[in-house]
Length: 451
Image (cartoon, rainbow, N blue to C red; front, side, top):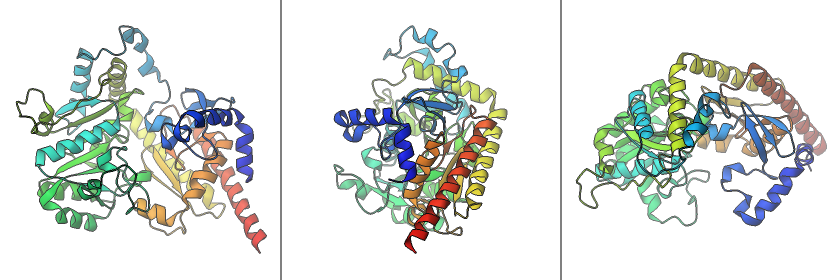
């Protein structure tokens, strides 16, 4: 057994026991595949600020931050303040109320493309409805998505998530999915425009994340080119801001990159730590879902929203988050930008000092570390990452070595929050330096053993 695996299992016997129990009652022992990693996932018992604690009492600096949702850290005071008192009136009414109206008003005022909003409970639900709206509005069928783009596990968008991209992503998907959901490569302007025009007559729309999978930044002009060509062809441009909304700026990627989509999907940060997904955008598109539209059956768009849409805690926490981010916009976003740049540079320098090729890319507070085959290897999209980097080394060895040093990551990185201190960032870089030294020594030992 590798040294880092042995250390991990010795540190986390409580997690091992819980995972054994979980395997008896849940497929693979989890209810979200991203939460599993070998030999077994870490089980935590509490979280506060930038830290989490596992069931064995080990403390970690958290870079996963609730699927990137906690931009202010775990249990931030602006969100939890007053929440118990207000939700004492009831957590779930299932009836319209003033809280959701006020929250929607704030969103329409702040989010550039938002003329109307429909709330749901998850990002998967939001992207499902956005695609449905696009098809209904255009009367067309084809949706283009980026290879590797993750928009939740809904049927329509479960195409080309991981290599090999030409193999069906899951059993249980009808054969028509691949026929009507087609793919483009992130940051490939020429290829994307060609694909758009090939599908022009039946193009309902494009759904795209402004920052690519693994937080690869968009190339200059890429998003604008996709938006412009989609508009020319009469399709709907959907910007998936589940992750980037209110994280890259108060106005998300729309504000950062100057794009105004026809529709956007949001969640995570905007939920204030509660369950939230939403679709927002042009009034003429959104009104297709209105119960007062007068459209006959088959012409209007079915958007149920879910039993737990507009739950009181979600509306209160979400609005409190948005208000706080708006009030302190001038402090929060420049700080996260600077801290993200420093951390990415520190990680790359740590590996470079040990002769290991590593690339840490990202935008703002988001970052991912990869181990390319060479320092010059291009990393423009998920195809480049999956073909030209050592993913197993990143997701197993790098992850577990950092865990052993008290840093919780995913994809070799994660998201910073306002709860992360300068001490936290220095501890992360120190842990990466120690890990780089260990990985270099382990590689040398393997080479010497094979000589």
